[in-house]
Length: 478
Image 1 (spheres, helix red, strand yellow):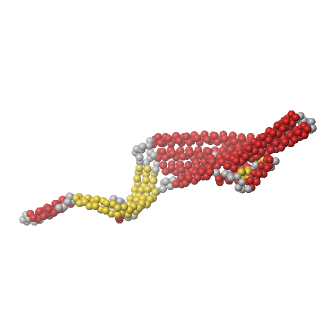
Image 2 (image 1 turned 60 degrees about the vertical axis):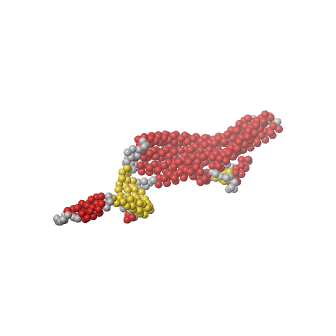
Image 3 (image 1 turned 180 degrees about the vertical axis):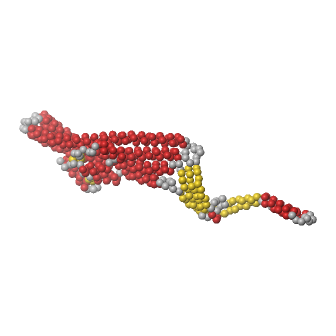
């Protein structure tokens, strides 16, 4: 009765909304997906990596920029007049020499010419000040980067795949936590129910023992045996209730609920075995988040090798510029310019050969880690598959054991009341029934958990709800 009251009270809280909630497994999955901070962080990481990959997708395209400058400048100009003066003097002397024979040129005229020439300075200096408005458009086109652009783009795409794999891994790990917490609470509820039924039966046995003792047909020692067993069953019920409250608290925190959570999907199992383990191994090698993450890291390391190799290669680029205000430009500025340039680093303060060697070592490390992870995933899948199959067989066998244990209790109870069976036999039969009930619930829980581990290892965790829906063996609470 106490177990029924506990379940009823919990269910009532779930219906009340603020005090708690009743969740099917699918509803619990949706709740966890929408409230998990770990998933929110992983999704943000995917968005960031995808945007980063998009940001570098156009590295091979030209860069077009516009600049607008307004400035005032001063320029000192100096022009040499020596050559011009010598040329004038030479021309005058030649002209005078070309005149017809005449009397000597008067000295006054010669002095006047010489004085005029002397007044011409050796150079002429002037300062120019001007306000300039210079709008320009500039084009820079990376034609060949030695492989750096491609390596950067490949690394960004691989980083996006890594983030997606990490999101899948976080989702699978949370799924495993949900299965453990959700069906762990259902297992705890089953144990509470079994413990309550065990206590109720022992109480009836004790009541019968007291009656038989008063009739003088049962010794005090045997009655005390039944009483001790009854008290032990009461202590077991107390522990089971405490375990249930702990399991409920774990699931409540996992789902970020304010009130206590009551699962509505029962423990389950399948009477039919799963497909062969090799099928899950093959799918795991293709879909395992762990392998996908390491494959992305391997691709990133390969891009690192290409990037390191590009440091030793020349870079070729095209360029161009156009001044929209060429009429008012500074003298050295061209109206427009186009061309092709080559850049090569003759000496770098970074050892390029050592950089490439380090990149190759990281590539080898990532390749080895990926290969080892493939073997580890295959081993995990096979172990999980065996765990599922073992739990399935145990669950089915325990169903038969329970039928026999229930009949054994009925027979010994009848014999005890008629004085044909002693207390020890009755207690052993009752304990055997309780153990069989608990073991069957534990086998169902082991099946549910091992199935989740198998699906997570093979990259098929999203199919777990389908297995729940197809289950043909369930352990529902009354």
